[in-house]
Image (cartoon, one colour):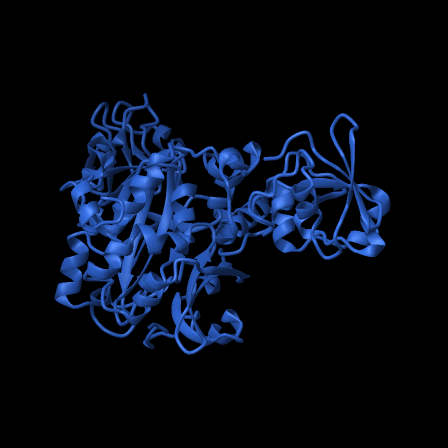
Length: 428
Length: 107
């Protein structure tokens, strides 16, 4: 159970809320680079942290993220014309550059300085890897650019997708640090998914349904260790890093690419699930990349031209109870990503955590909530920079290792959960 | 046998003989003391065994660990100076007469 006021604190991320201010300390994904594919392409609408924005790429290739609405009379600039050096409102021709500065108000006299005094709210938008990143906080405290490994390896080694999830970010994120659901919900996928199957570790996963959890602090968040029995008096540990506020990685399986997520609040009742896969040593094979595009692994099959999953709330996620009976999908829903989103959306847009019943397997969730709460309050009350802002905190990996029973997981695997560029991940 | 005294919301007292080594939560549940649930079985995960330890016993019962701290911060209805999860307090001879107040409701 969680007290109601803490549930509100954790789930509300609009302007001037404590958690909203916390998110505004970090660089975070604003959209995929593929959404603005070329100079002068059409602008896109975006809502982030309950702010309505327009992203565009001007004729010179500069990226901008600005207030969605024209300063004149509030028209959506999604209707804007992406012209030479700026986005022009089609209503009365006001034109803005990528910093939100108004360049032209055609109705004014030629010698008027009116436009100089008009500026829309704007945020930086920077391409790193397949993602366009933004920072929505005070420019005076803008941190260095993010250094997550998935966005730093060569383009042929990485793939990122996104999907719209109709729930608060927090219940999506909590799924990302909850290893114990995998044995049940995703058991079908461990046997059949092309991006998961065949790893030795999958057997440990499926054979031991009672993982023991240990949680350790890291500089940027937590490492959640899930321990299952292996053979010969050893333990199989799956180690999930969380970098505050909303970056999580799934422990690897065999030599498959390694994957993870960002859980980005759109508003308090919707979020973007960014899903990435990369291999630190080699290019993704054509088969792997195609499987990702087709929505296997942690990715989703989306309605063409959108980021809404084909299987969604309006069609009961294409529930297939016969496939459930056959043992193909444990829940009857196809695909790892939609298995998660279907259940997380079923909780309602913001789950009432005053009614939940937690168990020891939820210890990672309890710890993460407490870290978020403390960081949000320390920022609000004392201006303390939260964990995860420093790019050094981004250089973590998940790991899946077999260790002697006597060893502490983090002592034994400390080196395995750090990024070593060009070196393989620790995985069984 | 050490005694543990549980005081309910309306002042009703339950004095119970306790087995040393067992937790204050288990002692309550075994003896049918109302208001202490212990849903997670004593793993400091559910916070349904919250009690307020009387001041004079506070130095004797020790301090909560990290996980208990987190739950006292986030999950109990009203955290006070003496707030503890009773599953994390072991009964011992020197705790004879330990008196705890039981909150009117558990999560």
